[in-house]
Length: 265
Image 1 (cartoon, helix red, strand yellow):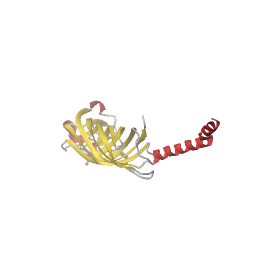
Image 2 (image 1 turned 135 degrees about the vertical axis):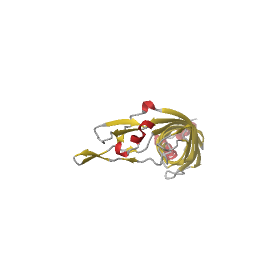
Image 3 (image 1 turned 180 degrees about the vertical axis):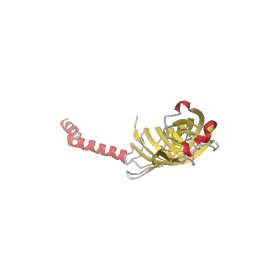
Image 4 (image 1 turned 30 degrees about the vertical axis):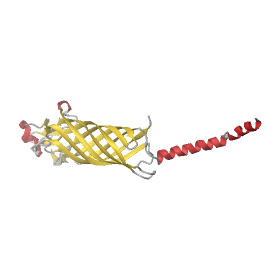
């Protein structure tokens, strides 16, 4: 009996061995976070995209379905710009041989066109990063509903004499067409805050597909570059520029940056 008791006591790890086991477990966990397979079941991120026809800001929430698939929801806000629009300014005579520079404006612009989008998509793992210096590559597809927000664009115009102290702020209409398109009368843009109360909404749908490259050193961190193509369709044609027919279908390519975190529920 004494020999059995002595044997049991000898098999119990010493405090030094326990500390070493804890240290090894921490190292193993650290390596899993840094270099192992990305198996976190939740992720949240935000980012921005530069589109060939504007810009987008977005927030994304992901839920792991399998080791290689993640379902995600995305909320976006975008602005579309006509390829022919260009911000400019002009020098306005102020008297006494002096000139003042107008505030920047877009000549011939009728409306700002923004989009609020909500959609669901899926990411599919193509290749894991393998080690901390690698890159995780995912193929993604996504679609959902859009609300096209059409806001009138305002200009600040001088009177016929060009007096900068006598100005009016107007949006485009047939009645003010000649003044609206007369560069000599344009003092500058009417201000970003104007027109929100007059905004109209046009419903639509959107879809995109692309590739995401995540180079974050740790698997619980998201640092990714995304490239792809995007398509949108709205129920009404949206006019952005004067004397150009509005469009209901928009197609663009994009590149975006994304940052966020992953965790287990």
